[in-house]
Length: 478
Image (cartoon, rainbow, N blue to C red; front, top):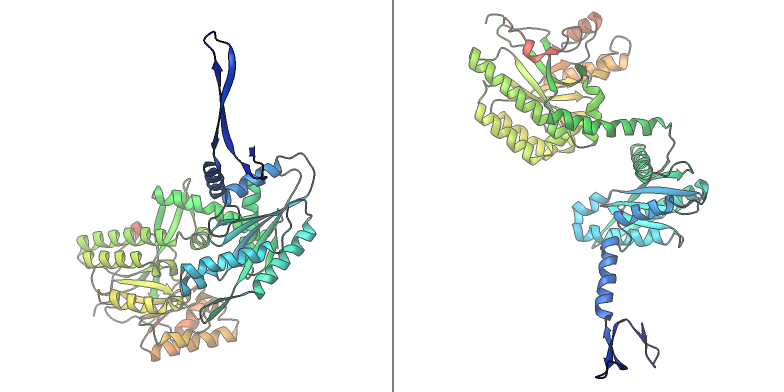
């Protein structure tokens, strides 16, 4: 550093070259000073950009993890707390006002959080609307109090954009850094799981990690399912099963129905969908699973048509809400149906009431396009939503599948009996046929038949079996 007379400092690179006479004796030297202010500033800027988030100015994920590992490598026994923060309702601002507004919101929230931190704390943006926080030399109790103050400050904050005002929240997961736990990846995974537990509990709240926490164990179990499901899809280890849906008041020429089900095969054992579908829904794998089910089912049905010239059943395929929201999936499905040209009325798609209501305009258009190709639609789990009858008028479906939670206790619960009776009556008034799920006993079967329900599905009328083992049925003559 070259110190000038006026007190200014200039970073330099200096070189010295000797000056010698003819006899080789040193008689002087040449000093050259090269001003490196520009290049040094550029190097500092590049170093800062490599370790900090360009939008908010706080450290990025890479620098956050480096500082965490550096802290964990210290031999001191001081207490620390790691926090994982995920903004709630951020997507609403992005979708409503655009990414420019979303970026400004992130900048303002960052400044709001920094105002509650100490100089020794590290706040970093880990990606999207997720932040990490290292509370250095801090016990759990004051860390929870600090997290609570941050949560309350963000909940009270109002983001104004144009004439609109938005309120958001934050879910925070906390992990105390124990003296025996010095693995950064394990701590980050625990903090992430605690944050998800806070979101699952209702959002805009705090969750402290406990190794034996039931919610966290369930969350981590679902996270492990992700790689298992991806491997199963890559290795084609899903299996198609089918369960009959039996008409309770059969008419001549009426075809029975059957619902396509999916199982997962691991080490020769079949795993029921209740074990892996919740994880698939949470981590965005349902479109891939639905695509596999649709592709393989349509291939099987196409082979059956080529062999027999017709289909002896109406086959029902479930579509998840994530698939209904996926434009590419919907277009690909329509293209497959147009190519195969299955017999009209032989294929039915089941969509849940909650998924249909969440994507009402897209679902109504999709139903219209697919029904034009000869397909039917059933509204699954009907009655589980809050506005079932109000939305039913807008959905051009053919069948109502009465939610199984009403069917299974219909013999002992008069409220469930009244609900089933009301749903069945409304469905018939609207020209829809009704299906009772979870028919597990002869008494339940007799009761739903007595109420006038059109079809029954459950262990009492038929167990699931492999699709390849499905035998043809004999229909009543017309």
